[in-house]
Image (cartoon, rainbow, N blue to C red; front, top):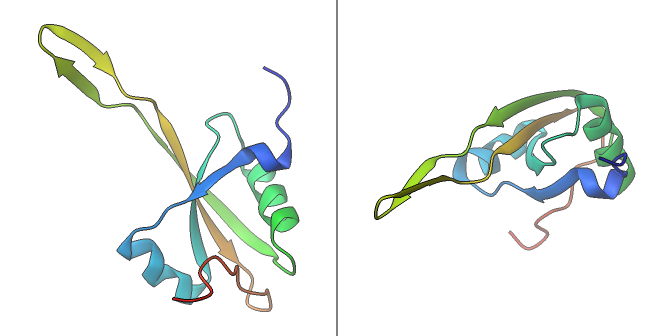
Length: 99
């Protein structure tokens, strides 16, 4: 596969109650490309959002679930989540201005 550009790494933010509560502590959750590594994720977040400095990145690989329709079995797509911790002096990521 060709090398990933920074705009291909982050697919979308994860919008759950737990992830919204962790935004107070400057921890953000993103769905990322399955082939992206931690340094690529850090670079992508710092380039996409102005004034943001990343302290650390934790990643979680999730296998696809087995689904069945009749007698046919299949799997859903595997995903990768990234938990991004910002530094204390970093600007916040303005995902939700009106919330």
